[in-house]
Structures are given as C-alpha cells and as structure tokens.
Image (tube, rainbow, N blue to C red):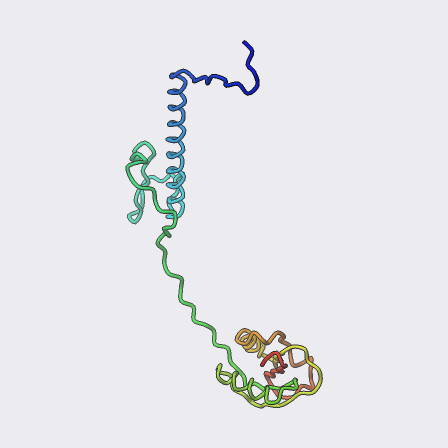
Length: 194
C-alpha cells in the first residue's frame, strides 16, 4: 500500500501492557527521587547540627549527647517532615569584644581652595563628629586631594578620621612634609571636602 504525501496515517497505539510498564517505571523513578532528596536533606541536617553519620566507632554516648540511631532502626523517611534548609543550628553568641579606644589628637584644619571659610566650615563638621580642633588656617600650593597628615603614634587616629569622612582620600605621615604647618594631625581640605 502506497501512502501519498500529506495523507492521514493511522495512529498506532502501544499495547496496554507497555503503557502499564511505562507507568510503573515512572512511579518508581519519582519515588526513588523523593527518597534520595529526603536522604540528602537528612544528611545536611546532621552535618549542620554536628552529628556525624559515619562515626559509629563510639561505644557509649556522653550524657549530653543523644545516640545516633543505626540505619536499621531508623524510622521510615516519610514518617517525619524533612528539616527546613533555612533553620540555623543553635550556637553560642560570639564573645563581646570591647572596641579599642583610639586617642584622638587635636586637629589643625587648613584650607587649600578658593572657597572662603572652607576650613572653618570643615572644622565645625569635625567638631560635631567629636574631634577637637587645635587651629584653623589656609595653605598655599596645589593639593589635589583632601589629605590628613599624622605625627608619630597617630596613624590609627588618621585612618579613623578617613573612615568617618570619606571625602578624605589620602593619609600621609607628617615626617615626609616637614614644612607643613600645625602639629600632630593636620587636615588639608580642598573644594571636594565642601
């Protein structure tokens, strides 16, 4: 029999036995996938709670531990709900660490811009943040960045000032700039500090 192109071909249905076998295989695959998923989540929960599934060499548990059931005596996986993957194990809070107090020396604030009163305005912001101001002035020359210069033993205070005021982008030791006015911490502000 010749079938012409575009002609309707009769559909061939598999025998009912093949359909039943296919359905049974699909059910077995789904059931084994569910069992595997439950087993993996159970192992993750054991690991997060500190219980090792492979340590069966102990003879007796300590009074504070609960014994790990052997696989033969464990209840079926479907009898209890799977643990939540977002549940965090109970742990002790971290120890309280007291912050180390950094001694804040008095600041000299120098204006290196054409903005009148920038050093005074900057000093007011620094005072409001808890910094003592030793002197306010101007500085000639050309400085590109807001810079804090520190003396011996003051580098931590200089970096704290930089963290507190992100407009400060450079921290330098005073020893490299012996002609810099002021003592201790000196902050040179440019127009970007405004």
